[in-house]
Image (cartoon, rainbow, N blue to C red):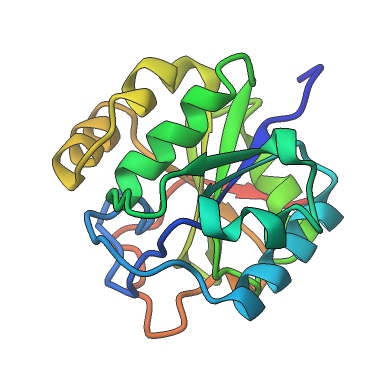
Length: 201
């Protein structure tokens, strides 16, 4: 890729820990949840900046000043504080804000664990795959990335049903990384069948 994919950080609400679907990572989900706590968001933004990928943060207006200490305000898509969308819909907002990106890596705002090189590995895997997710020793993590060809489907996401239709059409490919920080804080289901692995360089 000439330009790297955009890293979309979801600060306006966070995904609840849940068992990973059999065919993809746990994102997006239908839950409408509180904003990411400030301390967790700061740690996530630090990792995002260290990845050196272009960043777009989807946040509520009340979070903007804090986030602006890490990224430029032009890289923050702010929503009204009362706007409580599903995580799937937040993914759609972030993708729509960067329509010319060659792909998008989705990072939940409380995901301080993933290493910058893991984020870059997911981004690089989009050279060969339309939909990828990170996995550690075969266990599926919470990070997923999407190639630019999926733009029409991504901007239309609003629910888990939309997500299921997307992964049914574009099977996900696992990116094996040496990074346990990708796993949800509360459990993670192993893959039902080993997906094609793309070794993180």
